[in-house]
Image (cartoon, rainbow, N blue to C red; front, side, top):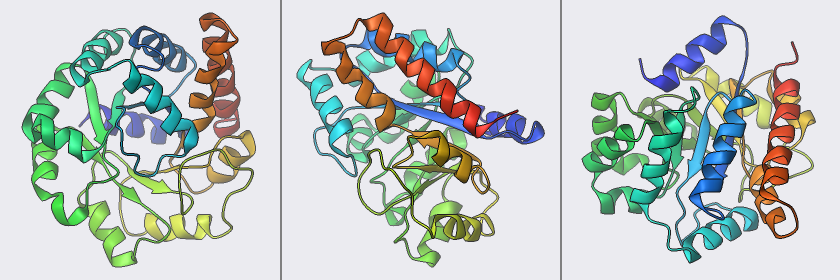
Length: 268
């Protein structure tokens, strides 16, 4: 059982939902990234998703794009990220997963990426641009290593294809709540709950919902059908506050928002 599987087994046993925050690695530097991950873990996050910056956004909205740009301007390297996560993973119990482009994994080497990630204490990878038609080799490597390969289903994914994606995923299935890019929204689509309910009938994997989730009302609504929620832009946006606030204040703001969302997701 992978670390991600263990998290969901424990959550189900206690009738709780997973809270999964996203943070960009290296914005503004890796020391700050480590501090934020530790704060999010101490607040009760179930899993922390760490974005590996890349220059060609896939579905990232302006907030995360800007964060990636800031990190890349500092010439951040994958091995440096792994080095920092090695230290962080040893200090927190919360499993870490990376969000990264398949181009980065392919360039690093499929087997090598999994080996280096696991050596850094990373439990899995979310790969938004890995086509299910081309995922067999990497999925096999991940399965043999018990390294979770978390793939995405969107509102426009044909149902037959959604089932194929679920069948090649491990850890959990990432359901994209809206058509479009990441970013905070005031409302979520009316058909979202029905779509997730259908998907739940097709796979035993936990289903976590991301994109556009930023408010306590969102997570309360989604807790009825989801096994967890993923929140990114609402945290990444606060990194820009470093221009006017101290690092300690920004870390505290991120932690306070995480606590509000976790309370809404798991009220008792």
